Amino acid sequence: MSGSRQHILVVGAGQAGLQAAETLRSNGFEGTISLYGDEPYAPYHRPPLSKAWLTDDIDERQLTIRDISALERKGITLRAEMGIEEIDPRAGSARVSNGGVIHWSGVVLATGATPRKLPGSESSGAVHVLRSKQDAIAIAARLRDCMRQSHPVIIIGGGFIGLEVAASARKLGLDVTIVEAAPRLLERVLSNDLSQWYADLHRSRGAKLLIGTQVSRIEAVGGDQAIVHFADGSSAHAGLVIAGIGVIPNDALARKAGVECDRGVVVDDCGRTSIPNIVAAGDCTVRRMPDGSKIRLESVQNAVEQGRSAALALLGKEKPFTETPWFWSDQYDVKLQIAGLSHGADSWVRRGDVERSSFSIFHFKQDRLIAVDSINATKDHLLARRLIGTNAAPTVDQVRDPRFDLSTLKSKLQ
Image 1 (cartoon, helix red, strand yellow):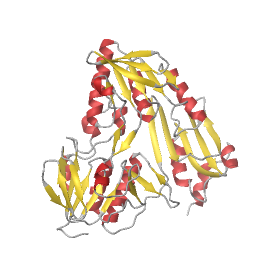
Image 2: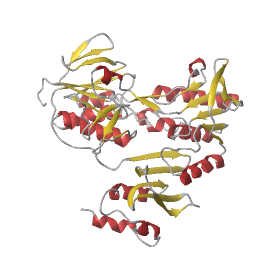
Image 3: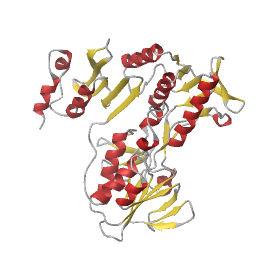
Image 4: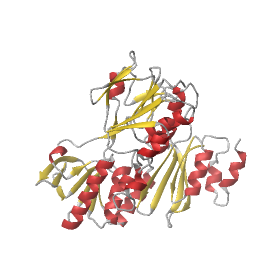
């Protein structure tokens, strides 16, 4: 697929879509590349939206990944504020939100995900979700209003987004309450001990935590305030409520086109879907593993690597994305870096200095290292990304021995 008459349609102008478009161009594709995005912006970084953007530590220029002029130099056409409403695989066509019809030789679905909303929350202007730049702009404005009026902030959901926004709000001096329905924070991704460590961290920085607490309803007060009612009959007032309760993959366009979906667009290690010449990447996808199970990863790494693999698949090149997954979260002055997936671990070893907030937890399954969670220990994290899944990975005894230099294991890598 390298002829100049070819047209590849990239649906979604986020990190995955941008990576796919640039990979196509840098790997010899000479045809037309159209990058369609619902938002009025050039591709931008999403991770700072819950952190540096809210505290004014980053400006719009720093947030942008590629401006329009940079895309034009690469021969990539950005169609901002323009969505794709329907894809017809048989006709090789797509219907655009402005009513037009375009023809394509290949499609990259990078449609992302949509935040879950609390039932009834639409009635209050105080309730927000955080996914897009527009969301972040609105939340930043509400945070300043809360500062001026001394209104508290309520974060519903103790996942990464909720905790990062909570940390940002506390850095601004606001009264913050974190509400989590599960028995602990970050229950899906962290061990019990590390979940407790994060609970202690947020309490030590002045945040209130309501763990194992269900929200029953949200009552609008005026146009910009709300009362959050809890299942136990109690309630709390807020000038800003953030709902950080997960996302739903945007797979409706793929489903309508007949692409296999299962809580996301189903792809293989190369980003290929069930329909030839249609690939997918990023938060909209679920990857089928060799054993038939499916896994969803929401991270910058996943978006970038899947975007690259998917683009190469359209060009007939094989580059499976099978690397160790990794993630990070910045809260206050603490950087959490995760390498691998700890689900299913049956033992763990802590290494480092907990008192100085610089340590790592090594997770093992049947004595095999499967994941490492690092707190302000970037050296451990980078090493783990290289060693997990290899014959050079450390044993339980090696990790447990503080005198053993784990970096020496790199010499065993092939």
